[in-house]
Length: 395
Image 1 (cartoon, helix red, strand yellow):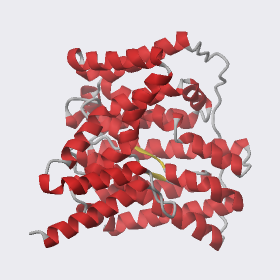
Image 2: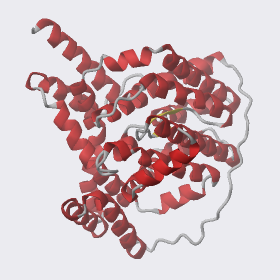
Image 3: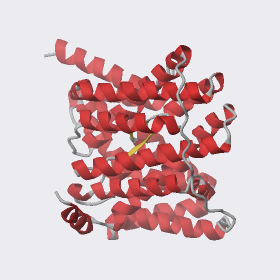
Image 4: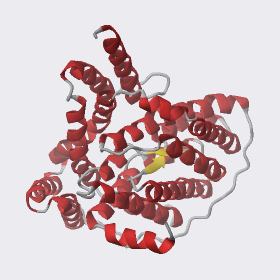
């Protein structure tokens, strides 16, 4: 497909709802999990210039991977940085120099690239039962649905109109229900919270190349765990999101390409890029577009917004951070309602596997963590083992 025909197809498939879905995904990414990166940087006493480069690297990397993969596969491929990986760095980064950390980032990225190229990642995903994967996804997203109503208790003046307009929209203008909810939430916040964006300075981020140093302890204590949690807690749920929405992702291609760009971005501070799960669910459902074939626009939109953040460094992050947390939590939860209900529905379709799906869901929701690996992974493992046991001995 040549450039002109690609542009023409994008124009034909373009929709406000898909662009807004991409915007919400990016807002959620920066308004929540991104704070962990600042915590890690603060713990390691990194200078502002290196933190800005880190922001640049993960933002530009997410933009490149999301835009390229969404265009190539015509699917809403949302990529992001490793959130559990950043959480590991809060404790691990202060123990090593940034050069040694970069070496660990490179090791993790190379391992992800290799597992994608080997084809092993596709084999793993093909073995995971759909009821278990969907139950795990529902467990991951469950808290975001709950947050809508806990936010309602905190600031009903902002959240209640958002909820009401969302459900009115589902009846009268379904494609723009989330859009309308976001707009009313921002408008009320501007007046109710007296939001002021006038003091925000616009500045361009400058990437800084950091030469990696190879420290065996850093490789073992940062690189290997970073690889494991990125694959287990990010890439596997990310594939599950796409599958639960009816897509057939090319797993090996997605994993290997994110690994490749991660290798390129690591010397500039990126600790790893991966498939998104929670923010991806915002872009893969009918809220983005009623036609599944046109939802890739949400992936392009998210990538474009990531690109803007990368170019302007921390400027847009300050804008996102200025929005009330309850607004961000509420719009994320409302946007994920269809994904939550769809995942629950798929997980409970087969009567004989319902309890297995339930166990998977409950473990994921519990938040238990062992060896730095999240409950999503353990829910998936337990669910898959129970499913295998049941199928083998209950024929």
